[in-house]
Image 1: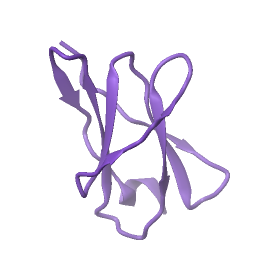
Image 2: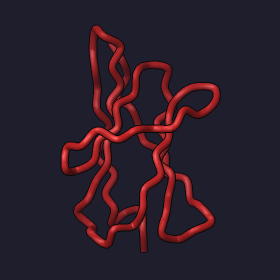
Image 3: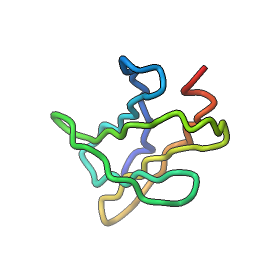
Image 4: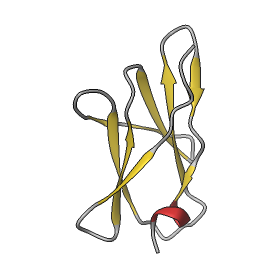
Length: 85
């Protein structure tokens, strides 16, 4: 069984953008609150990150799901209101 993933938040030089990181060896599926699947960028040595722009909607959220074919687990949502002041 895969573990429940935890999303790490990394600041960028631009206050309107942050990076969300899901650092696991399994297949990672990013989604937003609209249910759209987002394309992540591979990071070393394992995992993916996505760049999130402040869209001014505090209810927007992002999740990452781990899938190893036998099981899958989804992180708790990370809300835009918690990412930007």
